[in-house]
Image (cartoon, rainbow, N blue to C red; front, side, top):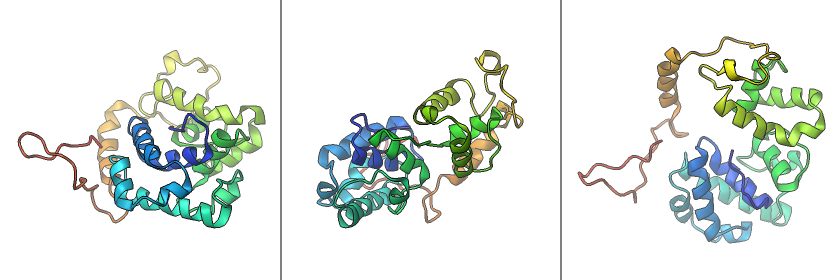
Length: 233
């Protein structure tokens, strides 16, 4: 998960919004391009949606996210004096901010206890048998009740790396897992033979909020044979 290295709460918040449904390798450069233009709510509101779209392309749903970050900047100025709140409930009043983003801002922007639950944290916590939940929000609440507070901030970083390299969604590498003796292996692991079905499902989900396939940016350059170059997403 991408979070701005400076620890500035506003940068953390905006970078997290850009990272949703987007790979970190794409989010990082996009966030830096945007912050080079504006890195405060007041400065962001001086930019047009078109300028923001061009800066953050090719993040997923870049047109929608351009409108979302402008709305967040406006709400911060109107309701919070331009300051990003350090309270999860207050953060949730901002349009486009969910519990994962709110927890990330609290932990990375203010170094306060919070549990950022993404797909890795939800999946691995259940696979280990540490919690038994059906949604990331349920996982967060279960972890808050069970996990010692001193581990909250680092829990996401630990499980994200672990989930990407060892406890993968498809064919987890159990033979080299350092905690395999403690793992209850809840739920059957998905085998690579089923990966093609998952890819088909993923392509079907890769549509914008209106149900259409992601549009190519109108300013995107074309290849030497006149075909639009793919952004890889």
